[in-house]
Length: 99
Image (cartoon, rainbow, N blue to C red; front, side):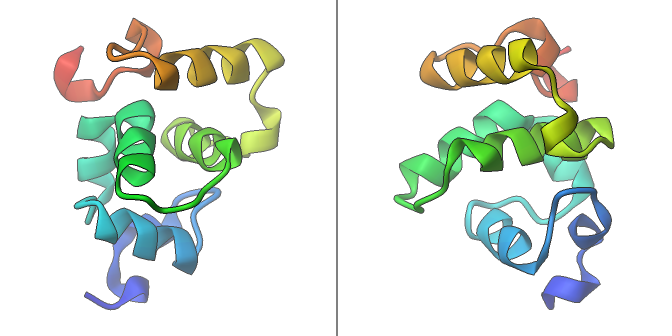
């Protein structure tokens, strides 16, 4: 699928490079991202050996919240990093499918 044909490209914080990364880990639509959640998606990216910073995690959560990643509070960012380091994400960062 062409990057610009994906509905992911229309999300806040998500550009063409991010869409390619998401496609590489099996996220092909906004619905996929919503169902899997930002934390699990970030884990999949890291486990695939793709080099991304914690900003990718913030960007994914911001995309789901329709907010710029830099507008996430320090507490939200810390909770995301903590969640990404553990197996189970806190409720506020779990996918819609797990809620």
